[in-house]
Image (cartoon, rainbow, N blue to C red; front, side):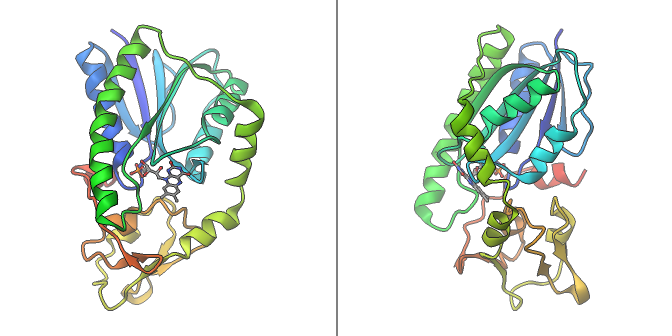
Length: 253
Ligand SMILES: Cc1cc2nc3c(=O)[nH]c(=O)nc-3n(C[C@H](O)[C@H](O)[C@H](O)COP(=O)(O)O)c2cc1C
């Protein structure tokens, strides 16, 4: 029996859907799986370790890079990555491979899946997202099959991907994007759900009044998507929340 350690970060739930589907696909094929959040330390006593996370700014969120940076040195631990994105990445798969190889990991497979956008501000986007998510579930099961039979690859385009990754290193990009998120204080009921579930503690709550700290926010959109009153707007527009079943319970564990 193969043992698999999955480490997942998800902002709005797409990546959680994929991680759960992977867990199920591995178990179906006789593997033992532990599904963890990216707050847990990586256990190297596994046959394979998998990192599952969303694409952001053609790369991924700063907290995901921090997690990879903190992963222990290894002597040939097999690792794979799966990222979810709306359309295109470029600055994640290659640079992450480089980083993991430096840490002594054996990079066995990488898969990118197109899914719903985290920023659903039109009905068209909602419909597109639903069909992309359905396809992603099928694709991830095929990827699991290929991983177990050793048929996956992890390519790297050195110069271009390193350059694309470098764009997301600039904190200003995240701060500027965060400024598009606004709270409608007349709609907010001060329940504090967003405060408790922000992965980078970027929401302050003085006198039950939500204050986004744009210098800390990574724009993962969790607060926007799961607000019970839909009190946040994005670029002045209301968001069509997607509220993936089971996701908030999983981050509240
Ligand atoms: C701040 C931000 C930046 C994003 N940048 C990209 C991008 O560069 N390319 C892309 O294809 N999708 C991008 N997306 C879309 C997400 O990668 C995609 O919706 C992902 O599946 C979200 O996963 P989650 O629901 O687990 O958070 C971005 C989303 C956010 C919130």
